[in-house]
Image (cartoon, rainbow, N blue to C red; front, side, top):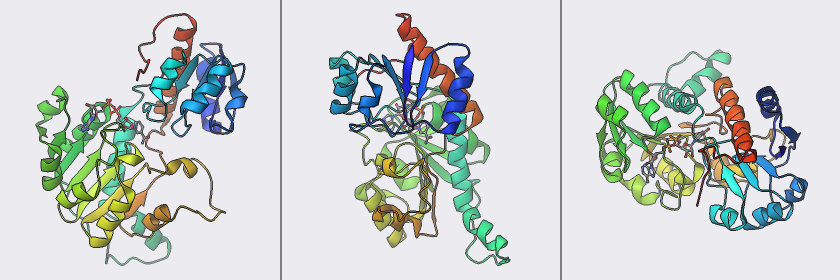
Length: 330
Ligand code: NAI
């Protein structure tokens, strides 16, 4: 099938081409994001392949439909960037990669926890400058600490297993209790109970209208003083301005982010020679107890291979009139 692939980086090209030898699709690689300005590039393609920061709102979907597009293949798990009811109304099928490597994201989550706790981001710079002083690098034992996991699906369950290995007490919030987590001894509690008791709060639920700003000024008030907040889910799970206030007051003791609510204008690009215009983001960068990575939690070789294979298989199934099982509906 002819597929217009948007937001393509060299690594996407490498893994999509590698996987495509088994499928034989006709791939066209495009660097720009899919947007109202770039949708014309998709004209004549029955399928587009997109990523997390391509915005598929109603006008973009209308543009796709008028260009003959019948399939949107997301090469990611989250689908909060697609207006699903509009896609359905326009006769566009949406498929995604629901699971590629929960380990990739879970392990990055734990990397953020460990690095923040032991201040590795600061220690790295100090040692390079010949400063071997330990002041300001004091950490805590993870063993015995309470970790609160919001969302115990595929990724949250792996985080639970890893933190269980560290000897953490585990709390979780999820409407669906995961048997793997229950067998580890995870205690399911309502969100406010989790926030009140947890030394570390880590977010692994999808972004939906219900979970938008799950962490806002009210929920921050409920958190333990000096707690660690980690978000590798989606940026808008957290109200960034409220978190900045929480950091200033010392209510939030550590913040680890792999996602940011306005990341679409920043992440995945080299902006090192430019002045960043987002004042909220730049304020976050000034805190010594904040560690931000640019949506890289998924970024392992294993995950990219699995994403490419599943994405191209999803397109193949659609082309053959078969359900892939990875369709998303509004
Ligand atoms: P999943 O669908 O396996 O699990 C999500 C869990 O969240 C489910 O158990 C669901 O019941 C629960 N949930 C839904 N609403 C909730 C709420 N209000 N409170 C608590 N729990 C709630 O999804 P998976 O694979 O574990 O991924 C989770 C999220 O991680 C994705 O939706 C995506 O946004 C994000 N993600 C981030 C990546 C990154 O590179 N930073 C890569 C992959 C996923």
